[in-house]
Structure formats: C-alpha cells, structure tokens
Image 1 (cartoon, each protein chain N blue to C red):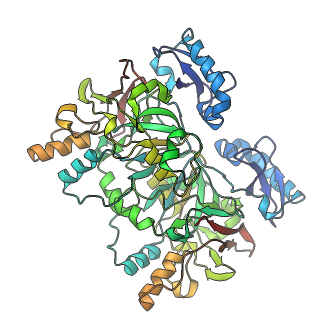
Image 2: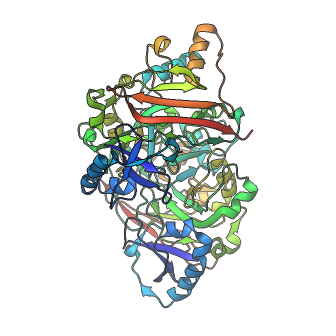
Image 3: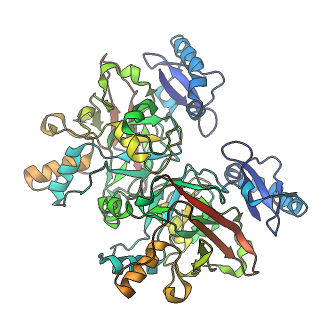
Length: 319
Length: 319
C-alpha cells in the first residue's frame, strides 16, 4: 500500500490511498487520518486495502495537494547509521571519533513535518542551510525493552525525509552534549508512506537497499544507496525502546544516506560534500543554501517507479 | 485557574478545572481535553473560568484519578537553566565547563507523561535511576523568531515535572553530542497546571520563585528555590523558537532546580547530591533508586497551599 495525506481537513490532513502511478487517490472511509489508522492498524487494514484498489480510478491529484504523510507526529528519533558520513565529517574537521558501541540517535522536532512541495522558511542563510536525505520507518506501538529481533515486525511504513540542518549552529550545540534544537528545524517528508512489500527485495535486513537521489537547483548532487547502514532499522527501534515504549506513529530515521563510494555516488548533504572537498583540496568549494535554492529528492523502486513520490522544495530564508 | 486532566476518556484524558483545595473538580463543557483548550485558548477561557467556579462545589476526586495535565504533548524541550547544577556536576566529575553563550536545552520524549501517582516502570536499577525536580511552562503557538521580550505572553500555564534520568547512560550519550534518548525516559507531571496569576509575586522575571520540595522514601531531600535560573522561561522560549515555530501545548522545562546554598536547601536530584558528596568527602554516599523507592515532589505557593498538587510515585525497575 502507498498511503498519503491531503492538505484538506484539520491539522492532521486527510488520509488517502494512492494509485500505482501516484496521480490518483482515494479516501479511506472511517479512517480520517494516518495517525488514526496507525493507532488501530489491523482494524484499518481492510479499508486501506479497498481504498488502494479504488485509487486506480480515483480522484486526480496534483503534487501540491499532498501534506507530509504525518503532518505532525508524537516522536521523531533520528539515527546516524551510515558510518561513512561520520568518518568523513571527522576527517574533514579533525574531530575525534565518537566513542560508542550503540547506534547514534537524537530526538528531533516532530510537531510539524513540512509538505513535500511547500517552501521551507528558515531564519537566516548565515546559519548554514543544508539538507540531509534520509530513509525512515513509521512504527506501531513498541513495548519498552523490545529486542532487535522483534522490532522488525513493528515497522508499518517506510518514508523518505529531508532533515533540514543549520550547519553554523550544529557543532556549537553538539559540543554541549545536549544534542540539537536550533540546528534541527522542521523536516520535510516525501508524499508517499509505503508498506515494505512495495520495496520487494530492496527491503532487506531492515534496510532500504535503493538509491536516494538528490538534485540541487536542477543539478545532480548524489544518489548513494540505503543498504550501507551499520545498524538496520530494527536495531534503531530496539535502541530507541530501551527505556521507553514507542507510540504508534513514531518515526525512526536512518541519518544521512552515505556510501564509501562517494566519489562515484555523491552525497545527500552539502556538509559531507564540503568535507570531501576539504580532504581532497584542502578547502570546501560548495556553498550552503540561500533563499530561492531548490532541493529535490527521489527514490526509484526496483520497478523504476518513484517509490515515495518527490520532495521538491524551495528554501525561503528570512535574511 | 488550576487545570487538570482526569484519566477517564481517551488517550488525552478529560480536562477539568480544580477547586482551590485541590479536592474537587468540574469538567469544562465543550472542551474535552487540555490540548484542545490550548489549541483555541481564548475561545476556551470563558468555559474554563465557569468550570473553575463550579469546581468549588464539584465532584470529589482522589489523587489517583489524575493523569498528567498533558498525558502526551507535541513537544518537550528541557533547559538546564540553573548554573549551580552544572557547576557541581563539572567539579565532581572534573569535566570542562560547557562552552556556550546560549541556554542549554535538549528535546525530550513527549508522547507520554506519567500520571502523578502512577508507578514508574524502568528497565533496570543498573541504569542508575534518578529524578530531577523541575518547573515548566506550557506555551501557546509561538512564531519562529519570537523575541524574549515577546515570549512571556506565550506562557499559558506553569507545571511541575519530575524528569526521570538514567545516570549510567547519560554521560555516554552526552559524549556523542547527540543528546539523550535512552537516558531520558518518560517524565512525570504534577496534577495541576496553573495560570501565572495563581503564583502572585512568585511569578517574577519568567521564573517560579518558590521552593520545589523533594522527599525520597519519606525523608526530606531538598527544597531549592526556582528563582535562581540564569535564563528565565521567556529566554528559553525565544531560544527554542530560533528556527522553528512552537505548537500550542509545547512544554519548556527549567532543568533541575538547584541553588548555590545547597548545603542548606539540598538538591532535587540524587546525582547532584552525589557530586556534593564527592566534592566534600571524596566519594558519593547516596545511592540511586531501585524498585519500590518512592519520590514525592511538592511546591507550596505564597499562601502555603500546594500549587501543583503532589507528585508521589514508586519506581518499578524490571531488574
């Protein structure tokens, strides 16, 4: 199933099932919002399946009609599971490696996820505006102490996220040890949240084994693969649930998709490309974003179709 | 107004106004939950005021009837605004001071706040179970870029919070720079959320100028005053809103209440008392909590009455 949320309705929008080509939708009778369906998934399944069939002859939609699948969520826990990303940042900035035998994870802002074609308002280009291409999963209720073995069964949906980041603030906040608040504004979410069966063999070992392709102002920026996570999503869920239960609708992020073969596949954030430039040339060349810059992210499934739809947004920096 | 949430109803409970003695309540017709009232505060005010009068002859309640005022919230951003707390921890553990000219703040778990007399389930006493007594404010919608001057007008309610903390995990997560996930399980919230007029002169410069009294297993542990914040709640709100708007119902925490006069007033967390013991005696004496330990927190207003009601809970550690 390919689920989405239209902007109409209340703060949580209106749940729809989406046709295979992403151009038509059908509402899900009895289930007004995706959060409501996640809260009572098994009961909602028959109606969502019926709506999926109906969507093939459903209402035509425009990409701007979509909100984020969850316009707001109770919890967003973002990992940093691609070791190449961390290694590059540490080499470029001469930082010591982060010493931990557990997954890296922070709690981020979840009360608003920006719609996939909406402008992204940010306070100032001086903050170092950057994107981060990520995969994520939306969970069911997960009990405290859930094992990694049991965690995979709690994955309800897979999503694609742009974790907007402010690079002038991030290292300052990181040094406090408290994690990020100002450096991590609202994220954007691609329009379609999909069940794992739509990924076919590309859903493997709790990983999305597909390229996440980023374009900036119409130019290719990178398309690394999601397989290269040091920890799968099941490990991230189990880590998150050590001392808390997770509510249905919790979103767990992979962290910036990054591959060892970055010379060929590029990057999914400017900061990593700048780190590579510093390592190769002694200084960064690529600038951060300013007002009017566009960022596009897409992932094609094994059938070549756009799995999560398209994130295509313009930064609107106030200063 | 003194508002509270009864456990009956859905996941968000049922909003009530509370009598001056805290023993009687009255529902608020048309406003089923505190979140709904926060979403549309001005419209809800007349009904909440009527219910406040009705509560004096209202339904008698037992302390166990109360949920947290917000059983779940869209955002919990916890400051660390009492400099004595940080200084003691740094001296005891020989840590470098945290270099920042901004308030310290992390994003914590907000999808569940534990009811004020419910047991607190935690995975293991080996994690170093501790409490942190804090004051907090619940905000209205706050626009991105709100100034500290404008922020005070966005304070809707004041609350008291126990920010449960796992001390064996906290420094490990802090060293990653990503902040805390496993070290910060669900918080507890005292039953009454009050408007600032109930604090009288004790609400001053964005600070709750009252003692927060902690008892552990019936013995006094500390009662430091809330005035000693280096940043007031208006500064914390402005810090939080630099690059994000805050949704109505956002909870901003003060961090562990701590005073320079800790030899007289004690502490509101075990970790700080252990730090003082290390400084004074070379080693900590006070142990962390285990299964069955009780923690009680109260704050008396200028009239001597219990302002936020009572947090009185038992830890239930699985191992």
